[in-house]
Image (tube, rainbow, N blue to C red; front, side, top):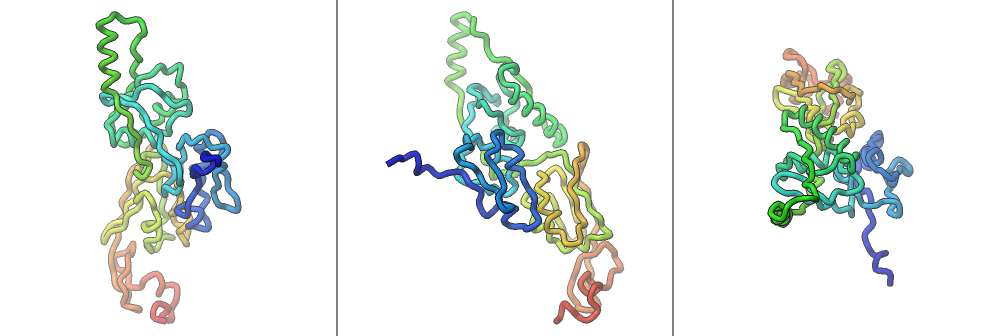
Amino acid sequence: MDFLSLKARPSVGRACLRSQLRRSRCQACQDVCPLGAINFSKGLADIDADTCVSCARCLFVCPTTAITDLTPPQRAYRDGVLIAPFSHIPPTPEELLLWHDEFSIRAVEMDADEHPGWLLSLAELNLRLARLGKPAWTLVSPPQNSVNSGRRRWLQISQAMACTAAVSPAVAPAGTNLAIGLDTSRCYLCGACVKICPQQAISLTENELMLDPLRCNGCKACENVCFPQAIAIQPSPSAFPVRHVVFRATCSSCRQPFASWREDASLCPICQRHGHGMREA
């Protein structure tokens, strides 16, 4: 028996936005795959297990953690610094953000000329950290090979203190360069976008609707579920959280509470569109 054939193959589960929302066009996993192992068949994502090398980049960009049977890569670190060995395929900025938050990593010890892909990921990471108001990472030169015996002994002790670990892709990535645009003349505050957003980038309270692009990762689930097409995700290098004032009222027709943009609103959106007691029917 070929025991290798029994190994679980990576796949995309039902949590995928394309399975949940008919209009979803999320392709974050496909965009980040370096080998083109992810394609879409009849609108649903499919992973070619024979092409996939289990780099797990897709794990860290999926907004609903729908990728199954993939293990996050183990990486070595010491004293707040990621150290060798480095993977041939560089990590996503989303993964590095998790290292920043979970393990307080603030630097990478490597030769930039030998790992250009890592250098690009580090540069994008620092752009996102700047938007989030967090400290940037630095590049640390690796120790030279030609050192005296005392220095060599110190390096051996330092290497012995190194640890290996992996970060959990279940933690939502954030800090992308996006803005959440809302047309309040179209929006009737139904709350569908709030319920569907996997990153909780949209919240609705008694007196406020908040759009937080620092949490948004561009999955566009809110766009897909918005019936009046009042919301749109657009690239923006300088987007910040936006708060909209919301009022609570009771409909004079159906007597149901509802949210409104106007303090003097008397009819809920349903009764505004249907004048024959549609909510009560």
